[in-house]
Every structure is written in C-alpha cells, then in structure tokens.
Image (cartoon, rainbow, N blue to C red):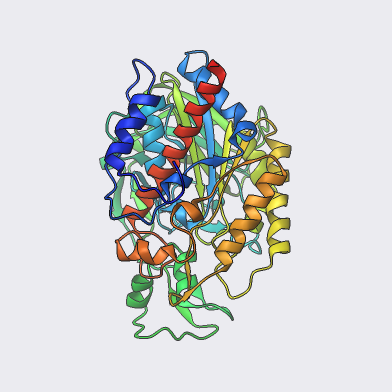
Length: 493
C-alpha cells in the first residue's frame, strides 16, 4: 500500500485473514479501528530488516505451527508503557489466541512492591518487603530478571500469588513454576505451598503508606511515573493544589498498604521445598513441577541454619507444559532507561535463563523526555544493552521499537523522541536488527495530540490511555503477523 493511502480496518482484517490465515487455523480478529483514526500510518506498519533480523524467530514459529516444537519464548523489555500491561497484555492475548499459550510467563508481585500491577496478577504478603527498582541503582539490593527486587529478613514470610480470569479462549493455569531468587548460605529456604486462599490471611495488623523524599530536579510528573501512580493521586494523597515541590519534601507515593497479617499455618499443603544453599543447576533459579494445574501459589520462608538471614525475590515464571504455544515474558519498570538495565549485572544472565527466541526492546521514552538529548550517549547505552543481550542470549533475534511521539512537561512538542527514533533505526540498520518504527506508525511528529483528541493518550501527552495501549498492542501484532506470513511466502517459492 502506497504512503498516504487510508484503508478501513474492517476491510483490512477481512483481506488479511483470508490471505494470511493457514487452513484450519483461526486468526483472532481485533475490533475495528474507526476510520477517524486516519492519522495512523497503517502503510508503515511493518518491521524493517526482518528478512535477516527475524529469521530465527519466524522459523521457530513455523516449527511450532508444524508441531515440531512445543514452546517459543518472547522477552519484552521496557518501561512504564509496559508495566501496566495494557500494551503488552493485548499483544500477549493476540499471539496466544493464534499460536497457543504455554503459560502466563514471567510475573512479579507488583502490589507487594507497592507499585502498579497488571490487572490479572494478584499478590499479598504477611510482611513488609524492602523494594528496589532498577531506576535506583545506588540502593544496595541486586536487580534480577524483572527489573524489580523484593527482600525481607522475616523468616516466616508468606507471599501469595494468584492469577485472575484468563482472557477469552485461553488457559493460564500453571503446572510448572520457576522462581528467580538470590541463593547462598545467607538465604532462607523456600516452601512452595497450596492453600485455600480465602482463609490464608485472617487479620491485618496495620496500614501504612510509602514515602519519597523529593530530590533536586524532581517534578510531580516524574515522581508519579517512577512510582507507578497518576498525577492526580499524587496530588490528592499529599493535599497539593499546585505543581510546586521542594527538595527534601516528603511525599506519599503509594495508596495505603496492608501490613503484617496473621496466617493459619494449618491451611498450608506443602508441595515442594527449595534449598537455596545450592547453586545447582542454576545460580539464579529453581524449577518445580506441580502435580496438577493451579491458578494460585504460596511461597513461604523456612530458616534451616543460623547463617540464613534473608530472602530476595527477582521474579516467578508460570508455565503449563501440557500446552504448546508462546511463552511471553513482560519486563517493564516505570521510568526505566537503557542505562538502568545495563547497570544491573545479574539482569542479563537471568534473561538468558528465559531462553528467548525473540527479545523486543521498548525503551527510549525516558531518555528523550527532557530538554536535552545526547545522541552519542544514547547510542552508547543502546549498544551496551544489545551487546550484553547478544552475549547472554546469542540465539535470540532482537526487535528494536521506537518510542512514541510525546510532549514535554505536558505543554511542548518534543523533537527529542524523533531523535531517539533516528538513533534506534540507524543502529538496527547498522547491526542487522529488525525494527518497528511505532513513532511513524502512530503518525509521526505531533501525532500524540491526535491520539489525545481521540481518547488514545492521557493529558500528559506522554502516556497512552488503556484504549491507546490496546491499539498499540494490536498494531504490533499486525506487524508481526504480516512479517511472519511474508516469511512463509518466501519459503514456499
């Protein structure tokens, strides 16, 4: 389709489905996008350089569909645009509906970490955990596969994790659990348990807030974004009428957090014990297979030696090895940049243990959100991350995604997002990587105003609305399926 041509989504999906769906397969059809969204460049919704940059990944999809492979792994790394899971959740649902779901993938107890969470992940604990996010590299905790870390010194901790209702026609129950955590003689052992979740926690003892001390250069929007809350929540919790804040000012940055709760130990049915003194077969993870599929699990601490002083959790992978399909791992941290992941030496070896066939990188928004943007510095950080990923996951294809158009400080158009886009596209071309230019697909410079006017972007003109992120997920799926079908067509010639 030539540049500038507008096609209705209803007609597009009829043609796309007829041409590209293999016999016997049912292609999920996303809801039609109104023709009023004519600022979206559907003619540009393709992956560049996919002919050499995505050969491995597309080959694995082909093997999966042919029944010659049970599971294909996708790792998606990003920032706040991912953490809320509207964008990634839509993409995950669509690829699972087409290729099958091998499980929910990497999850994290975000609510226990006092930050925003995907809607289908429910988490609670009987104790308060120390939290570190990769955007705070000076704090002493290590950062692992989720980009967020939890630590407690309570040997009797209980962490409950459950999944909500699965999307239509999908089953996210799991019979295989991989726990990423710190190991060694100072680490508590774990008990993986089952229980009647309605009766586990019987009494909340206290309620408290999380506080943040304002640093020089902070502003309300930045603080809200880094803590996964909205600007209106930040103002309401702190009784702020304007936008003025001062260094060393303490701000409430979380809703009331339920603190210590009593638990009835008679409820628990222990399924497995994990010896964290052992670094074998992995120094970072332990996998447990369950007797039946579940939607909820309990992780408990067990002190077995005087040297044990803490438990440190990096993330949990939930799989169902009785189902074939895609295992999609979302890694999103509010405020994250390339450099934050690069500063976490344990992150990349743990990504390797996810065995990715494709790594999607959705970063660049936070680097380009300020008044200045250093292309050389940005390039170096991109190169550092790609080099580390290629070192630890040499078989994975990498897909670079450009950031969306955005405003700066809610008021001013921001040309830096376009500069970041150019760096990413040039890097992908130079290093033979595939790229998805979402910046141009959404309409290019200034397009965020159109997205806002149509209810697709928030008032800050930086983040999208739920509807906007869902549209972004559909566009990514569309671009991937277009590329995959072209790959199949080339192979059949």
